[in-house]
Picture (cartoon, rainbow, N blue to C red):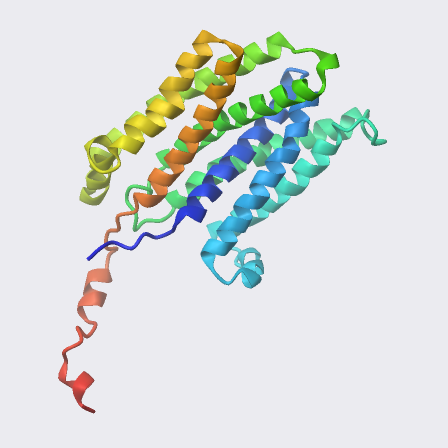
Length: 309
C-alpha cells in the first residue's frame, strides 16, 4: 500500500520561510550590533516579518480547521505552542525593529531601544531557526527526523538562506537609493559569511545523511539510502548540494555582479529543496506497543461484524 505522507507542501514551505525569516532577522541584528551596518539590513526585517507571517498561515491551513488556530497557544506543553508564541513575538518584534529604519519616524535616532530590540531579535531569530528543526526532530515515529542533528542542520541552512535573502534586499536598497552608493565592504562581508555557512552546511548535511544510513534504525537507514542513491538522490545531489551549495560557492568565488544575484537565488532554491526532501522523507516506524494494539484490532472479516447481514 502506498504510504501517505505525514504532511504536504505547506509544511515544507512553512519550514523554509520560517528559516529564511529567522535567518534574515539574525543577520539584521548582528549587522547592527557587531558591524554597525543597519540601514539596508534593518529594513529587511519587514520582509522577514512577511515571510514568517506567510509561513504561519500555511502551517495553520495544513493543520486543518484554520478558524481554531488559537488552540495552538493554549496547550502549554506542546512544542507547537512554544513555536507559535515565538513566531508571533518575532513578527511583532521585526515590525517594530524595522520601523527604526524609517527616517521620518520620531524614534529613528533613539539608540537604546533600538539596541535592545536588536538583542531581542537576535535571540528570537536564532530560536525560530532552531525551532524549525526541533518541530520535526521531536517526532519519534519518524526516525529520519528524530535526531538532535536536524535542528543544527536547519539552523545553519536558515543562516545561509537568511544571508542570501538579505543580500538581495541590500542590493534592492542600493538600486532604489543610488545616492548612497554601494558599500563594497558590506558585499564582501556577506559573500564571505554565506560562503562559510554553505561549506559548513555541506559538511553537516553529509554527516547527517551518512549518520542516518549507519544508524541502528533500519527505517532511518532505508530513508537515508533514498537520498544517496535512491528516489531522492537527484534532489539531494543535484538540488541541495548542486544548485544550493556547490553552484553558489563557484559563483561567489567568481564575484561578478550578476553572478552574486544568481548565487543568492541558488542558495534559496537549495534551502527550499532541502525542506521538501526532509518533509517527504517521513517513513514511519512502529512505536513500542503499537504492533500489539493494531494486532488486536478487527481485520474486517470477523463474524461479529457480519452478524446483522
